[in-house]
Every structure is written in C-alpha cells, then in structure tokens.
Image (cartoon, rainbow, N blue to C red):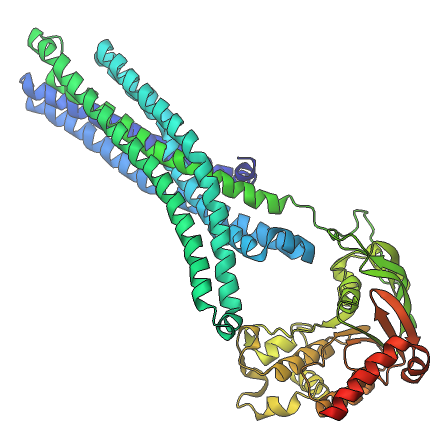
Length: 578
C-alpha cells in the first residue's frame, strides 16, 4: 500500500473525483430502487396519474445522473490507473539503469522484465477494480441498511446478518488464497526465465538435440503454474457458490416473512421489492469486492516485488556529497591503477590483487593473460561496473569514485568482447556515442575500423537497416561497427575488451595500423588473448591468476616473463601447425 500511495499521491485530485463519481453512481442505483418501490406502492394503492408521473420523472433523473457518473467514473478511473502504471514503469526503468551488473544478477534480467511489464499490469488492474468495486461497498452497505431499517427493522437485521456471514466467508477464503497468489508470482518468474533461456539459447538447444528436454522443463513450469492457478480459482468458485446460496436464502426468508405482514397491512409489495433490491445490490457489490480482494494478495506481492527494486541500494552509487569531483582536465597519465585489488561480493578470494600500471596519452597499453586471469574485470573496474575493494583507479589524477558515473564514462569509449548493435540503422548505432556526429565523421570512423567498404557496398549505406542485436550482420561486421561507434565518440581513453577476436589477421593488422594514427591524442587500453594483436603496444601487462606476472614491451617480456613466453610460444606453435 505504501508503494501505491507514493504513486497515487501526485494524482490525488483525479483519485478524489473518481471516488466521488462512483459513490454518486452506486447511491443513485439505490435511489432508483426506492423510487421503483414507491411507484409500485402508488400503483397498487390507486394513486393518481400525476403522482405516478412525478415519481417517474424523479426515477429518470436519478437514472441519468447515475449513468453519467458511471461513465465519467469509469473514464477517470482508467486514466488514473494508466498514469500510475506509466509512472511506476518509468521509475522502475530509471532505477534499472542505475543497477550494477551484480544487482542485475541478484534480481535476474527475466524477473526485472516481469516486474516492469506483468507485475505493474496486475497492479493497474487491481487499482481499477479496487476503486470501482471495493471503495463503494461501505457506502452501499450503510445506505442500503439505513433504507432497509427505515422500511422494516426485522428485514434490516436479516440483511445485516446475511452480509456479515458472507463477509466472514470472504475473509477466510482470502486468507487461504493469499499464499497461492504469492506462489503464482514466483512461478511466473520461473516460466519467464526458462522461456528466455530457450529463446536466447535456441542454437545450443538444437546443436545438442535437447529439444525434448527443454520441452519437458518448460512443460513442468507451465504445469506448476496451471495447478496453482486452478487451486486459487477453486477458492473463487467456492465463494461464488456460497454467496449465491445466502442471497437466495435471504430472498426466500424475506418472501416467507412478508406474506403475513402484507395481509395485515404492515408492509406493501413495493417495500418488499425495495428490500430485495437493496439486498441484491449490496450482495452483488460484496461479491465483486470479494473477487477483487482475493486478487489483492497477488497485487500486493507485485507491489512488494516492484518496491524491492525501487528501494534497492545500487552496488555502485555516485557520491552523496554536494560537489562530486570532475576530471581535473587533460593529463599525460590518463588512467592509473594504484595498488588495486578486487573481490566479488560472493567470492572467498580476490579476483585481482595489487595491480599497478599507468595508461599514458598517445600510448597503447595491452593486457594479456590466460582464461580467468581477470582481464575483463579490469575493464569493468575502469567503467565502474564494480568498485575496487582496495586501492584506487584515477582518471586524469582524480579517483573515479569521486566522480559521477556520467562524468567518468563521458571520458571513455568501450568496445566489449561480444558486439551488440541496436535496432535501427547503421547511422543510429554510430551516433549512439555522439548524437551530433556528421556522416563524414561516421564514415571516417568506419574507414578506420575497416567497416567503410562493406557499408558502401550496402544499397542504403549508413542508412541500412540493423536488426536487434545486429543479427543481419556477421560477427566480424558487428565487431567493426562497434569499434567505429567508439571512434566516433573521440574520448580520452579507448578500452578494447578482446574486440579484435572476430577479425581475421589481415583485417586485425590493418585496423591496428589505422587505429594508431587515429588515437594519437588519447590513451588506448587493449585487452586481448592473441599476442599478434598487442605485440606493438608501448607496454604489455601480463596477468596470471589475478596478479601481475610482468610489465614491459613484447621483446622485454619474451626475455623476462615465463607466463608471456609460454602464451607466445603456444600461439606461435598453433600458427605453424595450422
């Protein structure tokens, strides 16, 4: 409820108007029943045509007012729900942009997607239903009982007793159904996770002929969700049946008791009709409220899941101080690792230990090492996808933790190992790093990245269509476009995280040669597995099990670093055998 109030508060005026309109609507319905009973009594007592016409006009006016309020109330309620849902999705999306990689692993990508789409849709439906079906119930209950007691005290007490019994039944069933709805949300997350795995990993599934296994796994997830949903729906069915039973019992009791009263002249036929009309309306709205209330545990669970993301403290945060530092300006030492150690939150040992090196302007620094040596972790630390455990990383002499993440990343260009392109055009993707880049600048960057020729070969050139993820291009083409996107930005530090692995040796060599001229005023950090890619670097850092095994040029490391020499010899041997 705290979350709902937080997002309803900005729209409180619309909320108040909606509630008032719906209250007038339901009160008008009770008034219509009263006028109908009065007309019936007048008809049976031989009233004049003028009296009947006057009552009819009152009844018509009440009907028109109630109908108008119902239409306007439905419109304002839908508008309120849409605005609240929009605000919640925007807040959840903006929060997700602040989450670190570790935070995403904590929640799960599929779960965050479910919370943003399915959970908020459930909350919107619950909000609409609650306002339309639950909030008017107390008003209907009080007004209907007052009208019933005004006609006959005994009938009023019978109506009160029936409503109380149905209300207690609703509370009991709601309590038993609440755990089922909580379980449904977890099962929905499980279905989304398995479905996402099957879609994104379809090639692996087919390559290993595991279609049947995945069908069983997906089938089990669907079956578990269906069984739990059936159990919850049985609660609805039981409540519906019991509610209708008590409604019919009330009608039977009213007819049974009213016979003698009518013959004695204590009650009129219209009064009986009015009491039954009040009862039917009260019990109808009570049944609707029960159905809505039974879905509330699921909506509350969705609220809790959304709130957990919104209130989660990101692992990586900008400084709380009023004046976070910016980069101190151009410096020959663009990037410096000073005794840096890092350990993942759920790890027992450091992934990186006591790293010390400097990336200078106009020079290329390379990092090489075996699988699991921590190469890519270095790039994550520079970008502040994680924060160092010990030591500091400085950009132009300023600790990156003293800078905002936006300011830090504004000085960097990052090309990751797995190239990713967004749906749109090639120009849209290249302008992703610099929205003001001209077509000449983009083509220049593409030529440096060795992508110019294949872009010109396309019928629409820079305006050629790019599918989501760049699936309509080869791995090498995607990689070159990703490199061109980084070059368009013209930052102070380029980070290439094994970005040349998808390129053949000829293209790799041509790219490195062109890159050296393009990045003369910036520092370049290359993370690679191939020695041929980094052998011309100004300094090479060799990592082994998270520690520095050697720093120097290619020739120096061949003489002084056994780890580097082993990597070089293994790759040279493989090349000769090939």
